[in-house]
Image (tube, rainbow, N blue to C red):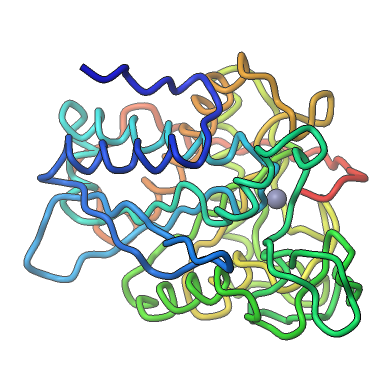
Length: 337
Ligand SMILES: [Zn+2]
């Protein structure tokens, strides 16, 4: 008998891959997996597709974790999220309804090469980028995958120096990891209703766009949905999350996956920046994994339920969803998240 997966610890890439295999094996009725690309170092990028099988085309929710290597709480959250929804659909009529109407596409670790590198030793723990080599005369490694998408690429909040933490790559979509997401999501724009990309830290819910001069057509609705999620988060352990566009509450950026998703027509696109606000930063202690994931689950569920009900109506009322709003307080951070 294998030891149960410990959701209160950080896991290595081999452990997460084995966990994905086990989840698929344990839940054959509702879980399958799809390889949709390869990393620079030729690892298969795999997502879990979760939902009740249907002959028709279902709507879908996208979630990716671990695009930035050092943000270890992010893959931990994807694991927690998968565990929770797989428990909930059996007992909670609302989740069961959502499993019937939608599929969840969940990538627990997108930047696998970087994540593995961040586990190598103390000197690499804070690695952020991909692991592709610089081009031309530049000898540094890595492109910031969240600056490499085809979404106002290269305009703000980036560097052209390949040694920078926010190097946006030689061209838009130069990185195979960004191309994989672009191809998969881009082929399903009519299907995917909601794009959630999970980062740390700062306790923020970011809406499009990262460019200060561009506004999403449904900006006000995105703010309302984000504020309701922040309220749901606060109700769990009292933590404050701030909601807004990146330039408003963090810093401007371009080439992010969140902005890409909104630009190609996915109506609801959010970046979560999980705990904390800088006390531990990227090295969030393991005793905070559980509470961080519990509250972020409530926030994500708030968004997903809203999106589902808007499209499918609400045959089943969500039990713990309070549509209250919360005044956002502006925080600033000197760190790249
Ligand atoms: Zn990040």
